[in-house]
Image (cartoon, rainbow over all chains, first blue to last red; front, top):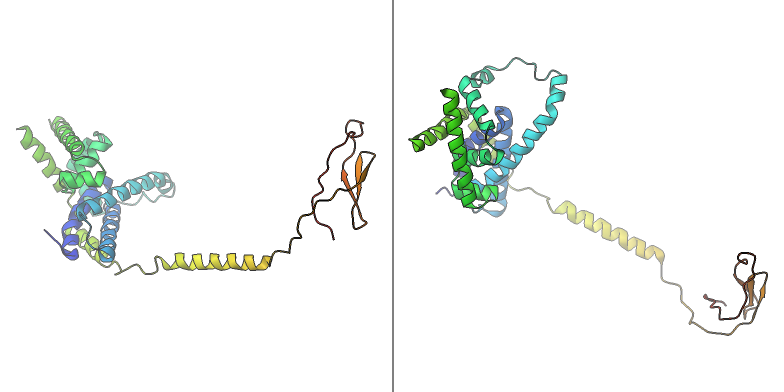
Length: 164
Length: 121
């Protein structure tokens, strides 16, 4: 078990970033969300000590911030389009991630219900245990297990159908 | 078989959204660079409370002490009813007029008790 702040941050950073990437599909925005969530943990830790579950703490913040970021992006999209902010040439990184596999997975994820997708991403991508995901989502563990199991099955079926 | 497929799905998800080491490093360093303690979180609130209390004190002092209230006295006063107005002669010689114009063309009539409230010197 990691008990020091730096070790916790080092362990959580790739997981939160991966989760934010999956939620938002925008590497820059994902970095902002992950950084703000981890910074909140650092502040809380330094001011009042380590929370009971650093994972649940960080991911609860990350999912709220990712939700807000997604809304802001939706609201700003027409403005960006109008002012040509989206007309830039995609970076090599953006081109690299726009692969078939990514498109296929994202579209399969989009077919899941928002609740199932959220639970699935926290557990499968964020690497949370069922108990930590339950705490981050404010649900019972059995509810989270059910959502994750349903999402796994549907996602596997979706990907298989599209692959076949 | 189904389990394998599900675990494969999770592995694919993790791989596809794997962040670059550079991005992870940036996020980690930025988070750890957070200041030691947010200073003054409660101090502005305390300052505002002190200012509000000061203003309240100034308002209270501005009103000054209450004027002394003379003790209530009850006296029977005589008056006349004229043109719908009750005219009462007060003990200090002044005249107090109460009541109002007649309603619907009728003068008020009858008898009763009129309470005149206030103080006179």
